[in-house]
Image (tube, rainbow, N blue to C red; front, side, top):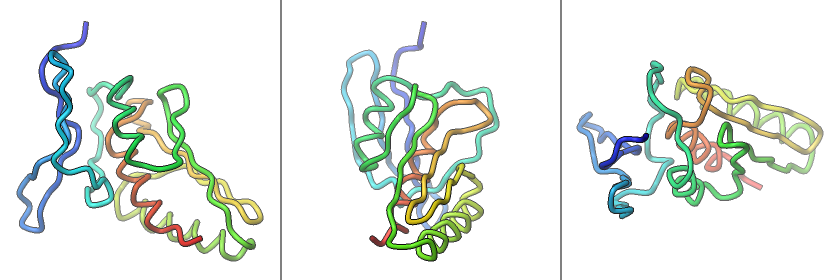
Length: 145
């Protein structure tokens, strides 16, 4: 049985390194409080294991903040991006690669002529965490159709 109470799953840090407000779900009451929903402003947090993957309502709340990303079997998220040619698609792949290195969170990237598919999950726990959605939001910011 899942523990009851609030589970916070978005943590922001200011430039001074202090923790800020985030999004939390109070499981007992079902209330959802959102004080900062801009996932792209967050930083991916390395997963050390020993945490549960997100599921159900937690995933639904985060999915609403990343347009066009699909949750697959509550295990990974994926999105396809379209480009006018191979060169632009490749440029995007390289930008996503740089972002992944900066964030320490590495997606699977598939490159084809005019199309890039990005798929991410937290490998350490073999499921989804907040960091997957943070990365998705940051990838979306890189996309210039």
